[in-house]
Length: 307
Image (tube, rainbow, N blue to C red; front, side, top):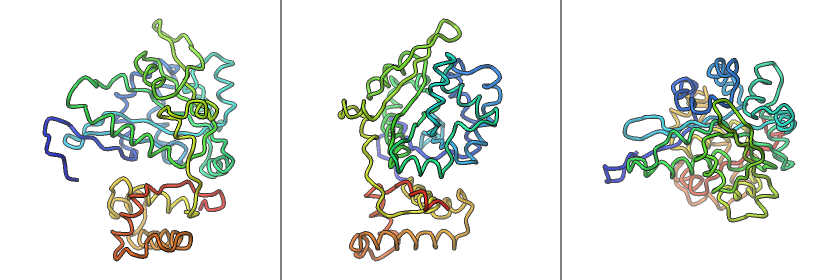
């Protein structure tokens, strides 16, 4: 990756997290420890690895390009909406309620197939995990590029979903104000340890329609899926859009080189059926991928396309 000439700025990228990133980044998440019961927090790191392996939560890392220092790690998950009401009824944080339920062998998170089905109905309830923005010193000139990478990453990993509501629970006052500035509202204030308060933040489809110019509101108006990509094809395309090589994508997805090539051929064939002229002028696979990258074409597959 080539870097701009300004050596006074630490440039950043956003990528899908790997299993080993979870424990490495727990110091970043420590700011959110007050949101959890002690027992839940103690078991959280290894449990998050399990959730990631089961494709129940997607984690993304924002890290510096030069020093490879992790700056932020966050999760996108989809939950059954009744857990929001359960958290309110028990005067508990939503993050703790969901994690405690999952650790207790309940099923608050939607499976990949359930996500696809609810997405088709426009009924997804999203929970953003870990509000660790308070640990980022944005007054440092070296961090000038951080917001661009984190904002682009947030949009990328939420793209293509048809939400009914997005939830996030945070307690640092600065983060509450930050989420309000991008369109989220305070749904509930809950006292927590140390004289602090947790704010359950909410953005619904109705909120987005009422405030269409708020930055997060655009997440509620995704384009409709066109190409009927399978889950595996969507994941391969995602890695390409995040600048991963085929070799890296093969390693991340546990595929052979031939399997990666087969998936690319299937993606091109599906695109060609729907939009025959889109890729016809491209003389190479690299050129075809560049067209797809310019379109930012990542979409959630239909339920029957889940492999």
